[in-house]
Length: 330
Image (cartoon, rainbow, N blue to C red; front, side, top):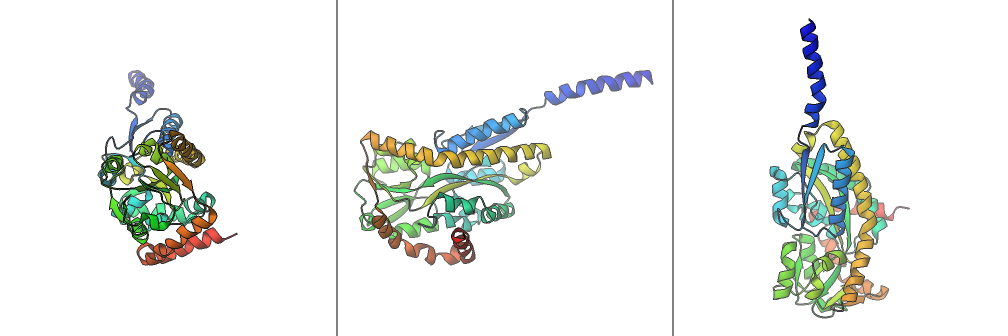
């Protein structure tokens, strides 16, 4: 009995050491933009919080700028478990069969960030993320980048100025319809290919939040930028469902808390980063910037008014109606 008690005590004394020697849970977080964009900074903030709140039991390894996977590959990599976490733009959820996420591509759908957040941070957004479980992934949060501007190598004063231009878009039926409504030729390209495509003339222009434009040095290959704020670019942070549901409950709870804080951080810095980028573009002297007047913006809005209406069946008429009703509510 004494020997058994001694052995048990030894094993108990070794248990904390064995736990300490366990390898941390690895989360590979892949994304396609630069580290100094709103998404890149939010990902780094999440990494720090996740590792701190779990006491080092989780290690987050970030792969920015398409280091691991490019736009069209990262969703498949996540589903296969080759990475644990990604944050694709909302335009890219079509291949998952979640085409309702393209509601965020509808031009002039959201009048401002406050109205947008009533959706992404409210019941409608939560319901959209919840439905991703059926696709084998878990939706954790929406992250902002910002509203987009059009750019090209000629002035874009009116919607008619885009006529005939080859404009790069993300893979979205809504964005395709948007460009066609302006008389442009939509061309789908991966984000990492855009700079070279602009430099070589494969495409004539594109649409981006200012942070994406500046961090990819597009001011070197685009002579004109018009601040239209016509559409929103945001992301959904998603994880592999099998991985997430296999985590210890306390770890999962800590990561959810870290994600909530990272999401608040992303919301805070997005506008600031885009304002700073616009000033940097202006200071470069390489790209002429036009800011629309209220009347000019209304002209652009009218030119694109039919895009959302024409795709209600594709996106979901009820979803569009719910969003508009929620934004209009006092």
